[in-house]
Image 1 (spheres, chains in turn purple, cyan):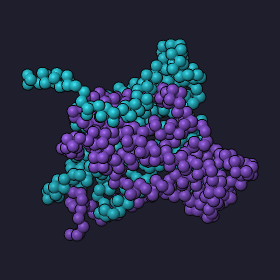
Image 2 (cartoon, one colour):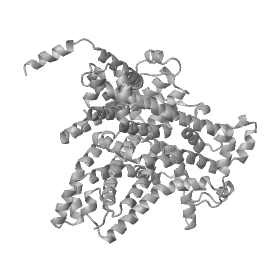
Image 3 (cartoon, chains in turn purple, blue):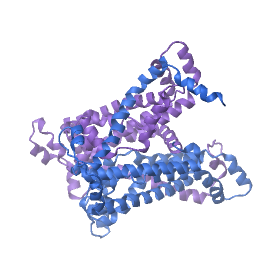
Length: 308
Length: 316
């Protein structure tokens, strides 16, 4: 017998024959490559010389290696830097705000003796079933709340999801012993203090799960920008790429502030590879981060799937 | 038993404690968020029954716009779009539900059978990558392959002596491309959900089966699949509950909003967005209203069915 310890029942008893194992392995190798290779293609296009792309087209491997696109982006500066800044700021502020709003509500409706518990639970629950739809949300956000062309349009509408609140509530009711809260109450701590200095520190697993979900959804969001942002100074990286996909000159057009004429810039710009370089700028942090956080995601997703 | 209502009544008469006050303070920010971003739009839904003007103050507009009853809906259902968007929305969703269950279950079972645990982890991680990409990024990836003059697919076609295809102008390919992309993006996610259930199955079932001389196929059929059934049914019902909603990014970004693909890529969400942006509010609000109401009905019925199957998993 092998000396490895196995986690699942399938491993120990359900051993397939060698031939089938090789077959399955090759199937998965192909599928796994199909999931990763397209991203590598984008990377290699971003590293290909513009004139080569113009003459031959995109290629799977960087045929005529060049950092042209990246150095153009670096030199061209402001637009990209500002978009990178917006994306980062939106992700950080949004995640912190979202986690606070979600966990505080989750905690409040997890307290069994709280007077308004069932009222607030309904407040959280109803939007899971019924919503106002895109048109009326758009007008409320853009006209009534004045979020059109505002930084907060990228943050506020995505901050809370009832689903996350329910996950928090379930976590608090099932893992935090009543005694902890009661003894703090006896010591004279008020509920707000209990929440911030006792509940949050011992709830790291759920904070991590929800924080990660929020973090990735803010980083990847393009829809809010498309709906509410017209001002190029407020573009996130996603919005910038979106703009570049329809109009490759967008980068150069907005660079006139550098003192170079935009016509000259447009002529010099490595359009095709610059597009893909921006895509890589978006993908890189995600691709580096997610394998480390995969565990949290899996637990979060399984909670979501089973308890949906 | 008889004391209970009495007790309840007394508890209700309890004065507002300090604790309740503090908890309410804690809940106020999120409650305000809910009112602004969830409940106000619910009332804004009356736009669907009005002839709404866009310019000027919002509230005065809503109040002053004349009622038109079901005119907007009439307009929507009499248009040619109605049939196309209903067909696309429901048709794609049916295909997505089937492929979104069969393939992940199949792959989860297969990957659970691999001998090498490390390799299986590597495959899972690689297959999970597309799930973390935004649709804008995926549309850039798509462009690298489908672009007419530079795309990799057309270069490949050229190499084997075939004429290049103008992919973004040819609707006949897109149902396949969209379905494939949807599978591509979601496969890692789906697989992991089922795999989590499979790895949680008690190994003594398999031990007993092996002692009885069951083959791997028999073990899969009589142990793994029956124990997966509950999760499968749940995932099925949840996705049926969202049958009037589609992934806007898939249908709008990836097709690059190409007019030639209108018939194969316009779903309710795409129509609503486009009408909203072109300021034809009447039809957009009617379509959004229909989507919300039908969505609500399907979700509630799905939940009702879940409750019949497994009371613990129901939402309400």
